[in-house]
Length: 139
Figure 1 (cartoon, rainbow, N blue to C red):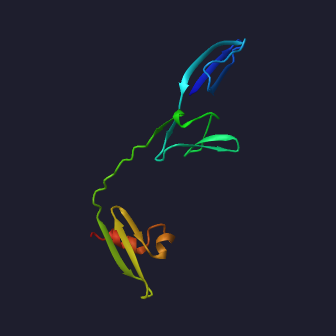
Figure 2 (tube, rainbow, N blue to C red):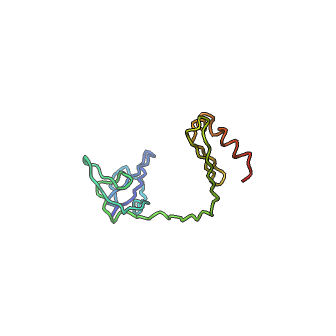
Figure 3 (tube, rainbow, N blue to C red):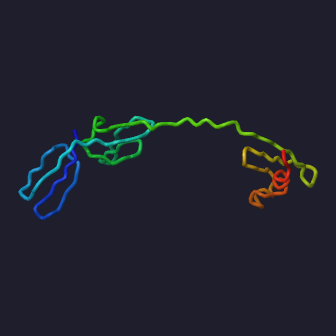
């Protein structure tokens, strides 16, 4: 079991740390506050503990932890996943012949979004002649 320890010393300094023992002996110690401690994680995956180069981590998340941490020292909660229902969005697609007569460009209107496949769409930052024509037309 892990403990959160907060020690106050005669010189006024305070030391906070996590320990496996709830008591600490020192002639300079004025008082201590000791509470049980648990790491808290929130992820879709169950937590694990890895030791890499002598340091312990809680995964996923790579949370550095006390060297004596065990899985029982971790409180794991799964995040709440909200399902969002999107209303039916009206979708329109328009076809334009290019000025050279060989290529075709498509304009898609999904809700308020208008996208065109012509090169001018990107050059004009979304305001090509095809998009302008669609905006001026009531469909």
